[in-house]
Length: 274
DNA sequence: CCTTTGTCCTGACTGC
DNA sequence: TGCAGTCAGGACAAAG
Image (cartoon, rainbow, N blue to C red; front, side, top):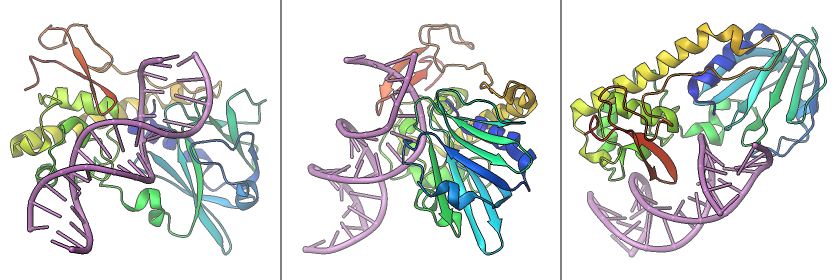
């Protein structure tokens, strides 16, 4: 389940092919969340990779050659992985897309569940419908306690579901929502408009530190993450509550509870979170 | 049958 | 009245 830190680590792992020119694109399966455009191989052929950026959980690969330019949007869904191969190797079952470069290296997308996406945007990628209305990046200063508190005023739904709304702030997936609420000692069922400014301060701080801790862990495990076998696994983190139903709280020892909120699992400690 | 993710859509409702 | 915002729920992608 790639969350923002894994996406960012994936982006870092791809940086070595910056400046390379696309030699050949192979699409083995177009059926992703949205179909991979039939014209993608033709579109990318001969373009040079200029920039690798990230917005929310999208990796944005900007390509250009002469007049032709645009950006490839890559989303990993819940089971997607991008590996950078030093040279072509035979594709396996769920390897849906290869982007081969002139120097022989290959970016390969593997996504068993195919919830991911590969899209092409000519022109300004920030105008793409999927990106245009997104909220701020969680690690930027525009995402702060005042912003959160202000935007929670009109929200009556539970803080857990509200904080996962990408129009409010991006990159807070199911795992980090539970984790940062625990760290901020806020009960996930709390109506968003009941949060005090002080609670918003704690929550923003914990979202930022939870994500940046994970980013640091990702950066330091980059070599393992982009393993020599070209088969990166996701770095395993120790969670306070996520997936720990019935196990003892790492702070107070009471059992971790799980509930459903908006058709998603939420994990929390009843005695630590108020 | 269940679970998992992010995103989009619909219909109902609220408040200005 | 009209409109924008909000919310709950469901749909959807596929596989284990």
